[in-house]
Every structure is written in structure tokens, then in C-alpha cells.
Length: 132
Image 1: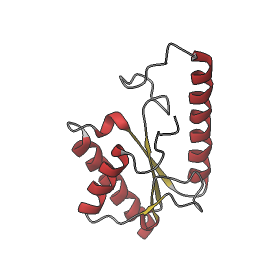
Image 2: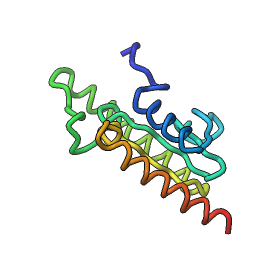
Image 3: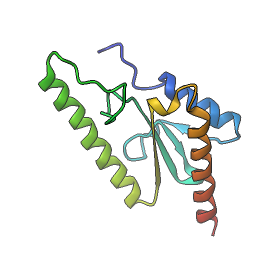
Image 4: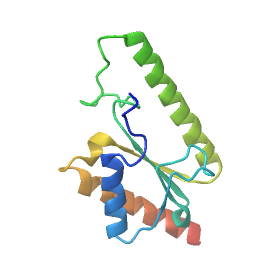
């Protein structure tokens, strides 16, 4: 597990490249923002989390399969990740941030454009709300 990345994962890089190519600017892993989101867009007051389906327990996803060995350890680990995520999202929402959670399965070659268009729409709507 020591070789598992927590930063600059392939799904995260796909999101970052798409955002940059479409003119959105951001900061990475900002420690001062609760939960240390993968991508922070202060202009839009938005935190984007790019979650791996296995590590964050994406229910109903083909990438989330509970391991057959050491099951109790994995259930505990994934449940703790879910609880931490909920806590962080709640804190951000209470502080007026928009939270966008992107799942690894939503960033497949076939689905990335539709997913990112939805993100862009969400960012533009939040920007219009902030600008008022």
C-alpha cells in the first residue's frame, strides 16, 4: 500500500488537464481548506475531490469490490474514509464552499466529457451566484 498515490493520480490529472484546457485556474491540495481538497478554485469558492471508487467505497460501482481476505480491516478502513469525507464536505458547506465529488468511474474515456461539462456548468452557476 505504500506505493498507492494520494496525489497526482491518473483520474485527478485528467480533471486538471480538462479544467486548464478550458480556462479554469486552480490550486492543488490547499492545506488551509478543510479536507485538503484535490483541486481548489477560490474564484468559484469550490472544492473538488477526485475519489477512487475502491478507496472511498463507491456503492454500486464495478470498481468497488470488497476484498475477500482481511475483510474486517478493509471494511473498517473504507468506512473511516467515508466518515472523514462526510465530515469534510459538511465543514466546507457550512463555510459557504461548493463541494464537487468526482468518482474514478465517471472519468472513463467514454464519460469524462459529459462529467466535466456538468462540472463546468456547476462552476458557472456558482460564479453567477457569488457575483450577485
